[in-house]
Length: 362
Image (cartoon, rainbow, N blue to C red; front, side, top):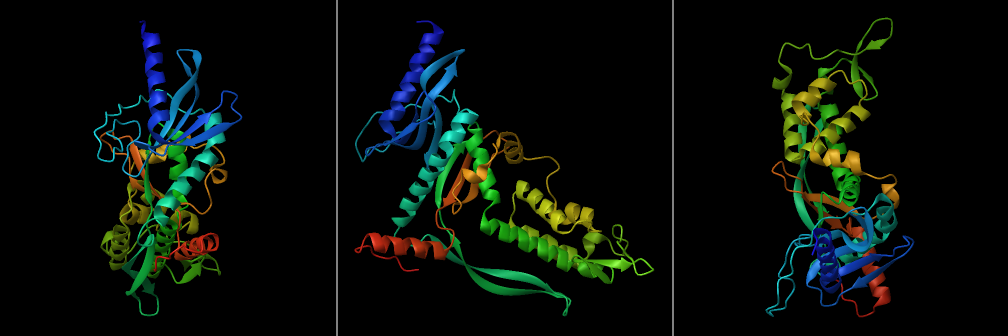
């Protein structure tokens, strides 16, 4: 058997394994205008897969495994013992990552794919014995300009719990969409906005006596304000009490490198022309000197129009990032219910559709 024929046999075997064992299988028709979705009740691979036409050795083949998304702890494309319910069954070999969705195929299937992922997450969360939230006591910090000191107030917040999904970096269109969705996460943006506001207000006493767009300026004469270029105080900037408190606030947030750069961008956008911007970025926010793998992936692979592909109410957070050691798996946590109000609305709909539905108190 020549090498090409052998490779085609292996590709067919991978497709057959996915059809037989995957939990959910999208099949793209060759015309590129329709698809079908099948679910396996006795699935041994807890993955969502996409099968469709592709190009191999310059020729078009009718079916190949184009995408796998692991559900929960399942890793896509990896070998698995499968769900055997205590029975001794044969191992499922790994599938070869030889193909990917084209931009046209991904745009076509993405809304249905995200819809299915949202449904899987919602069904799993609804089956839990406890609500999809946990309460945590945190300390909220703010700077009082009247008292001229930082105050702390303990506060209890409800944070959502979600379902893990694993995506390979090589499935770049889906991975970049999920990275984009994470930037829209309401809790994440609340943290970043809080840090931007705290840093700006905490450092305001070190500026001049006039205020313009939230930044204090020194008087420039003839009624015109002027900014202070850099820090000219006697004490080193990084030794200031306010700077140390801002550093502690950023450290408490435990932001990964790519989100520190997002914080710097957000601070710059809200405080255009801030006289201490360079020092704030270098001494407080401290973004990495080079772009991270996640940032490069987001820049190079994100297709236009992600807002139309991702459900508006779906919240996404990255649980495991790309590592310098070469790990190519990204683990995302999807939250089908971002707030207790959304959970209460879902329960109300469940009660309307099923009178015997039993609530889980929260």
